[in-house]
Length: 306
Ligand code: R5P
Image (cartoon, rainbow, N blue to C red; front, side):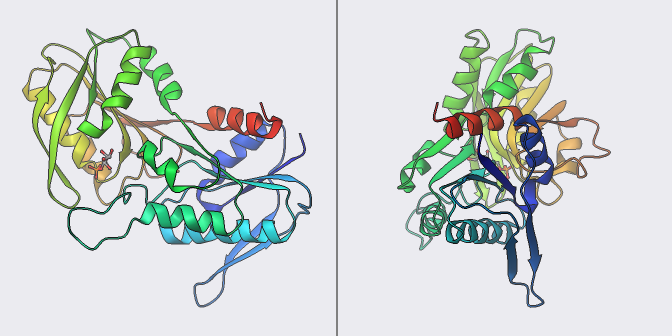
C-alpha cells in the first residue's frame, strides 16, 4: 500500500496502533506553537502523489486540535498529496448539529464540515457520529463506522443475568436496538430524560421492564456523566441488578470520573477515540477498548478501494 499516515497530537497512541496494524510507520510532522499561541505545522515527509490519512480527534482542547487538523490537511494539499482522508475518531462539535428552539445559535457541526472541505479534505472517516444526519453537512464522502462491533465483543465476554440493553435517551434508541439485535434480539429499555440545565440531565422514567435484570446502557458520548449516572440511579430504583455502561467517546469533562465512581454504575467501559489511559488511573470501575482494529480495517478498505 502506498499510504502515508500522519497523526495529530490528540491520538498518538491510537495512531501508533493503527500504523503498526497496517505494517507502516507514522509519517513525520512537527506540531508546535508560536509564542503567541498560534499552531505551527511542518510536514517533514514527501507526500506528492500519495494516499494520505491524517488521524486526529477533535477532543479537548477542541479548537487547538481542530486547527491542528485543518492546518495539517492544508499543508498536505499544498504539498500535492493525491488524496487526503481525515480520520476523526471523535468528531467534536457534533452535538451542535441544529438550531435549538428560537435561540440564536450556530450549527457548529456544519461549520466544521465546511472548513474540512475548504482546506482540501477528500474524504472523512469517523466513528459513531453523534447523529447520522451530520453526514449530510459534507459535500465529500464520509464514512461513519460503528463502534458496536468493539462494544459487542466485550458484552459477549460477560456473564449476564437476563440482560436488557438500555438507551439513555430517545435519540439513542437506534443504537440500542442495533446492539440488542446483534446480541441475540434481546429487549431494550429507554430512559426518558430531560435537561433542566446545560450539562445536567434528569431521568424522568424508564420505559421497559428492568426488574431483576442486568442492564447494559449504551451511549455515544459520556461527557459530564450526568446522563449515565441519572439513568443508572433510576434503573436501580426500578430493581435492576448490575448496571454496566458503555460509551464510545470518553469526553469525561470536569469531575465526571468521580461522579461515575460514586454512582450506581457498576462498570463503565469506553473506547480510545479520546485518550484517557492516564485520566482513569485509580478508577477501578472504568476501562477502555481500542478502536484501532476497526479504523485500520476501514483505512485498508479506503486505500484499496474495496
Ligand atoms: C446526548 O444526546 C448524547 O448522546 C449523550 O447522552 C450526552 O452527550 C452525554 O452527556 P453527559 O455525559 O454530559 O450527560
